[in-house]
Image (cartoon, rainbow, N blue to C red; front, side, top):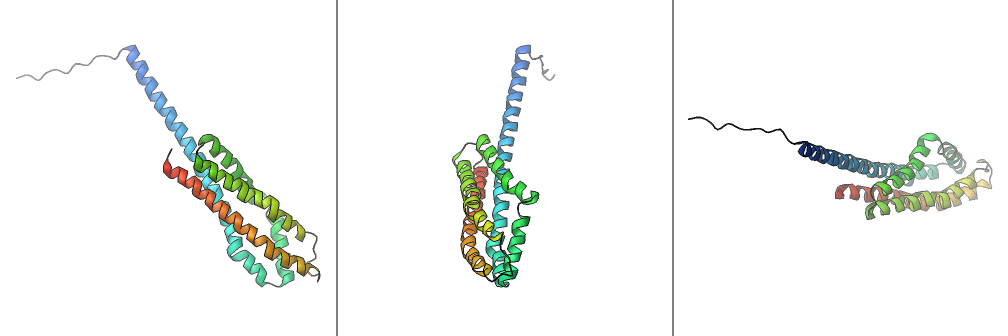
Length: 185
C-alpha cells in the first residue's frame, strides 16, 4: 500500500505579496503598540519617581528640619533650595512633562489625560504657584538673624501642605498611567 504523495505548489506572486503585506502590517502595529506602551510606562515611572521625592519631604525631611534649631533648619532648607534646581532633579521633574505629553500623543485615552493633568496641574502647577514662591522668601534671609525665625516658621506651616498636594498628585498620576498599562489599549 502506497502513501499518498503530498503536493506542494509554489505560491503565486499575488499570494506572496499579500502574505508579505500582512506580516509588515502586523509588525508595524506591534512596533507602534510597543512605542505607545513604552511612552505610557515612562510617564508612569516619571510621575512615580517625582511623587517619591515629594513623599520623602512630606514624611521625614521637613520633620527633620522642623526638629532642628530654627537657624539650622532654615540654613539646611536654603541649601536644599540651591541644590534642587540642578540637572539630576530637573531632568526628572521637567522631563516627566515631556513624557506626559508623549503619552497623550501616543495613547489619547482618559487615564492618560487624567494622569497628565494630575502631573501638569498638581505637581508642576503647584510647584510654580506655591512652593517656589515660598522657597524664594527664604533666599535673602540670614539664618542667624532673629527676624528670620518668623519667616521660617511661616514657611514650615505653609510649604508642607502644598508639598502633600504634589505628593498625592504625582502618585495619582502614576496610578492613572499604570491603569492605562493594565488596560492594554
